[in-house]
Amino acid sequence: MPTQFPPEYFTKQDTSDDAFFYAQPRKVVHIDDGAIRALTDQFARLLPPNGAILDLMSSWRSHLPSGMRFSEVVGLGMNADEMRDNGQLSEVIVQNLNKHPQLPFADGRFDAAVCTVSVQYLQRPLDVFADVYRVLKPGGIFIVSFSNRCFPTKAVNVWLSLTDNQHIALVSRYFEESGAWMDLQAVRKEGSRSLFAAADPLYIVHARKLAPQPHTDQP
Image (cartoon, rainbow, N blue to C red; front, side, top):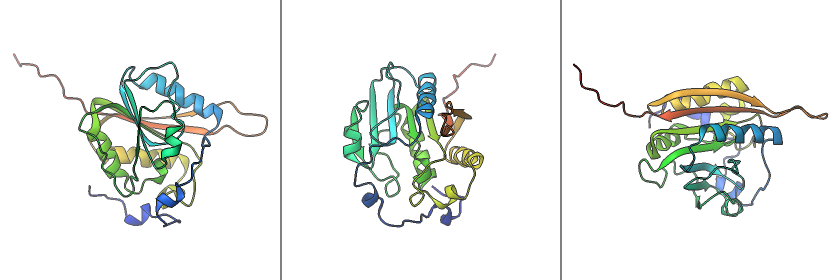
């Protein structure tokens, strides 16, 4: 897909193959407990019960609501050991989206897709967002969440140069330039502070695949 972004935006400090970086499992969470609760609450509000869910750039935890049931939760990520430890996944696929942004799924397979605290690593974000659009059903939702943490050597340069509010604008632009998304929304959530540290901020940008309007005969 053509992009209006300069190519240098999506270069990284560490130019080695991502497979080397993600070869070893990292079974840690990347946001604090308050941010995780806020994310899970948003998933409970936005995800369709009994829907088919794509967990993009998946890991050992998906933070989906434990009380919700889904027809399937397909994890696509870089480390099979991490994803096999994720009890919420019904299927595991290893794929490097920076090399192969096209998803191995049929058109309209999923009711929803999530990308949790990983969008900052995408080097071909418009291609990936466009293919998420393809594999969603009409009206399906794509939920992208992030905080102020990252592996700086693997985050793209444009991400490292922006503020949190600018990250929201950047992810919103990914949606705007990758498909006929509708109901684009951005929210900020924050857990309670501890005595020792400020809570991690949580930013969520989400939109839905355009659903066809019902045809009505004109009088």
